[in-house]
Length: 126
Image (cartoon, rainbow, N blue to C red):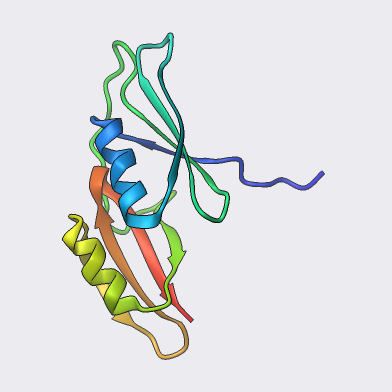
């Protein structure tokens, strides 16, 4: 059996606001929205390509560490294809993202943006 990526999970102090940002920024669809027995609001989203992205708040009594959208060890970012890097940068900045690196590159051109909840994304234009 192949090991497929089941989902990406983002934590947010305002899951609804965060989920709506991803809907606006990348055409995500909200599949479900509920408060779990553990006290956290849990919103299940799906990208146009089928990737599941879960967004939830803190569980009851859970202390969350500070986020970091800088380059760092461990899970560092996830990437999205772009047909027009500059147009996507402008569109995402208007939604509150911040360009932190690039654009750069001759083959594929790339850039990195800091998005809400300290999530780092990469845009890749082939």
